[in-house]
Image 1 (cartoon, rainbow, N blue to C red):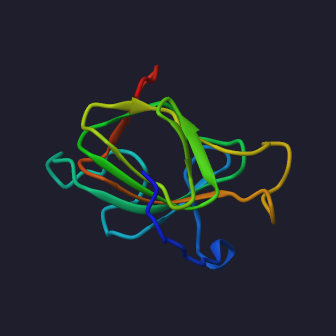
Image 2: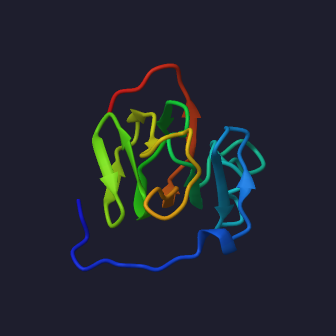
Image 3: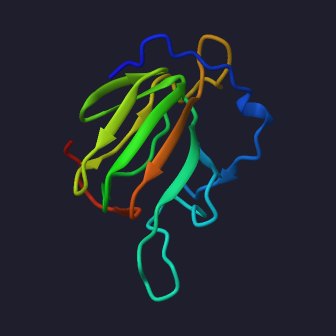
Length: 138
């Protein structure tokens, strides 16, 4: 779903991105429990929500993963594709609990991000976190 009239100006290079261990993918935690993209856990093993900004360099993506709860994503810059289609800046995507996908930023992985070839920047809330899996299907 595109958000009509939605426009935002961000300076992704001005943020303190943290590496994720996945080449070309970094994040900024926005919630105290959002230390990584996996299922954040409280003491005792209970899954908690993760709220993050995610940056995927052109042509890079996150491995196939299952949403343990609902995930909501707002594309702030660039775009990505997955089994559900192409999602560009201004798109809001909601993934149901149990859904699986493998997002990849639009663009050529051999070219650096820049004007006309932006990195994909997302605001994402993953309820109960995610788990990595071997296959994907939206």
